[in-house]
Image 1 (cartoon, helix red, strand yellow):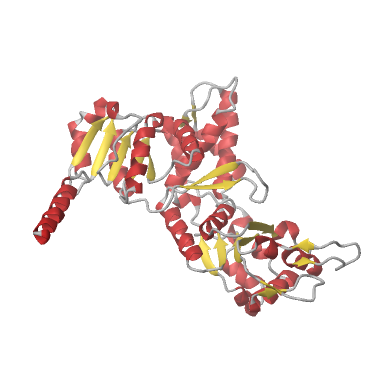
Image 2 (cartoon, rainbow, N blue to C red):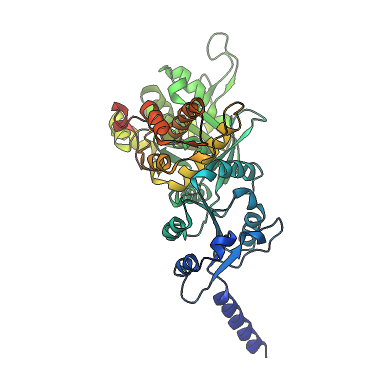
Length: 439
């Protein structure tokens, strides 16, 4: 009897799952009743899985966890989506891989940025992908590229100043499959004892945040950051003091100092701008890495190196190899992580544009708050190479915002304003482009 009941239960579960919609769509009444749009969406679902069209009027603060694999918000105001986003989070908490796809128009970018910022600050963001389209037909054309489950978190929350108590928090968004794959790899490194890692990425690509994410997954000790470009004086005693510390009396008038390795304890020592690992810095690191011990300056007893080391550089791997003796280079012995360039990560680009516009709009007093970008302006952003990654995109948007405000008129940043910002902050040709890491 037990075996028969169990078999029946399994068959019932399989049948229920097959009947569950593959794609559930929330749209305006106009779009929900459009048979041609419904047919186009239905063709994206497997033959044995139905499409479910729902009206935006059904959205509310308390919604049941969806049964569908994918839930699409079709060009709706992001402010309507709290209940739906919470329901998706509930489904994921129960073990499903439900994914919410938020499709917006170019004129909804600022509204999306306001919503992402609010949800991020509340730590209620996950299981989500982004899509930018001028109309419903464009959504249908782009949707197949978004029908992939979100495995990792969409959000990394970190202090603005990682080593200052009570520092305000900031949000780093990870919507693209490329960045999702990288965070999954970082999680794997941190969880499986990979304690020496090299982050390769161009300027402004988010290396500090990703190093901090490694620390969050490692979940021990402290996060200590050392910027070699700012702090390396070329004096071995100073570098040794910085990394290893020194004892009282190590040099005239010196009190004791805890170096970065000791201060991190068994956490993470993040060594940024590490293309500066030459000469005295390399000598100090080789001493520590060869046997997992280091000697504070002026001390007579060595200490164990317990922290993980995360290096970061905006240089290419070839540039790093050529900068030092190969024997010294191999002693670093770090596993590599390549940060994908922003121009390859459309969904992250949407998030950066949206949240930056939201921040700029919040400052407006006499200028009209921008609602987004024109379609042409977005295409210019989307197709730009972005050698400076996130930092360059933010600078271009800030520049375009100033021109937009002075111009007055409509509520969208236009292509001429974006072009002017690109000429200032993201030149197509520059001698430094050749030395940066590209992934």
